[in-house]
Amino acid sequence: MNDVKFGLIPLPTDMVEAQAVARRAEAQGFYSLSHNDHFYSPLGTPDTPQLECLTVMMVMGMATETIKLAPTVIAASFRTPPMLAKIATSIDLATNGRFICGLGAGWYDKEYEAHGYPFPPLKQRLEVLEETIQVLKAMWTEDEPAFSGKHFNVHH
Image 1 (cartoon, rainbow, N blue to C red):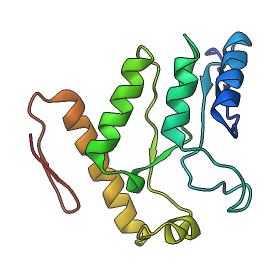
Image 2: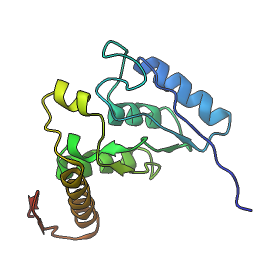
Image 3: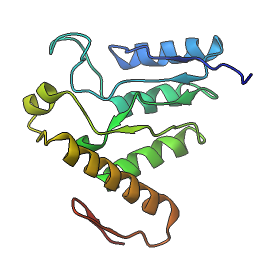
């Protein structure tokens, strides 16, 4: 049997708490830390504190040395693929390769609408996710990344 690994999703309400819980999780032997990529918590109300996912990942990563950083699925439609590639690369470099980039198509329609993001049908969101993955792969593996698709065009 493979080793069982446990991650923690602490959902801190400020950056000092994020650092403290990250250090504690690492000291207790957790494999990874996660944070959800939402504008407001789907577990609470729009008034429930909700820090920005990738910023929290960076803060927790800078406070630790070994624990992996694995967002509980980054919504591909919240950031352009080149911006996401830049942010994920920065976090990964700052944390010596501990960032795990999990992506999803997005699902919480009320959140999209409340923050001015279009919420297209699932088929289109899945197309955007697929193209985002292709752009990220190109940007992370090619010397002169280029991609031309239905939703994104990226050229070096």
